Image 1 (cartoon, helix red, strand yellow):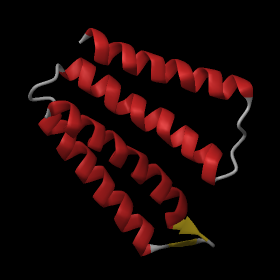
Image 2: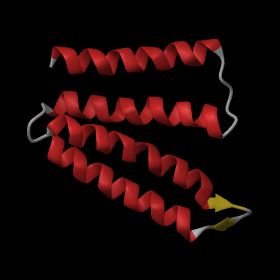
Image 3: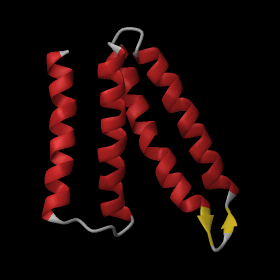
Image 4: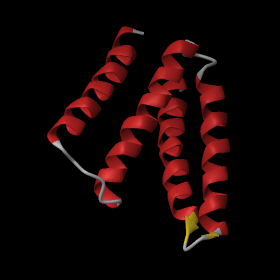
Length: 106
């Protein structure tokens, strides 16, 4: 069950930076996206707490941040028109490979 918690925590880890991006627009704070960011942060950390009860904290934290970093960068390319260069995709693939390696060797 720890890995399920960790994957869900990683998914919520994607939500808060994207929500923050949408929370500040037109020189004003939008309450909806800002609230979504807070909910995602708290949910992500809560699920990480549950996951690390059965997964070593070093592995859990690395996987959690890896999902967040790679996923957020991918979402930026897909929905925020950030550059999707070959090198960016290669380096994102390295993050994913590292996270998978931790899962399979842990």
